[in-house]
Image 1: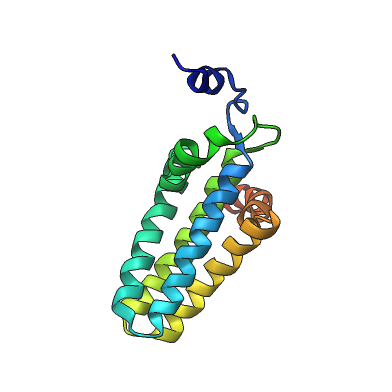
Image 2: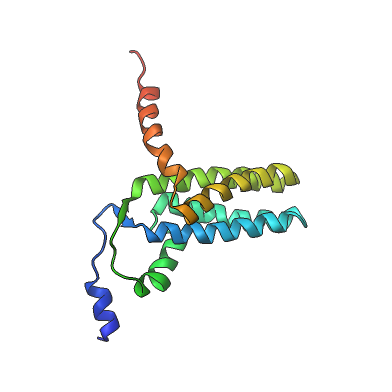
Length: 164
């Protein structure tokens, strides 16, 4: 076993149910880049924009279903980036991140529908919403979906309570 593999094997991991904060920020940078390309492509036609946004929607769906570690960008981070970084010093819970991916999925699907319908404006507006949220997370560590998560948890139980 090489020294590099030994270091990776002994590197502390975040506790169960949490991830290294740098992983979701890396994913947010990749998402930001993809969404910028979607908006640039939309200036020339909706077909390429729809395809790219459809792929990003799939990434959001996998992130929401599988969690940040097993999402495509999470795997990319774990394989290519994390081994080159210092040990994990800060972790964050997975559940709000999965919810944030769900919110991104909703925006991406609405943008996709807009582009497929031929509406550059509708598609671009929802793509821009997703881009804004991804950029805030990437550049400043502000996860809007994560901030919404506790509020949604408070509202959902109240919505399911019905008088018998």
